[in-house]
Image (cartoon, rainbow, N blue to C red):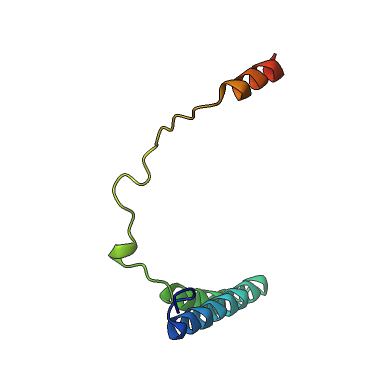
Length: 85
């Protein structure tokens, strides 16, 4: 249980994933067959299986641009300079 977590929860997550994959395949099949009504129904069911609650909402600032300073070793800089020249 330390490595894999609670086994019952793992089984539920696996079963949910299998159902999600199956519903997605059904949606694609209905869409390819131009059965829009069935495709929309399946997509609605697929959507309901996800948790879009507020706890999953993005935190403020998560989408803001970030600046990262990368420090490159002197030898690597020298090599890069030679390659660019």
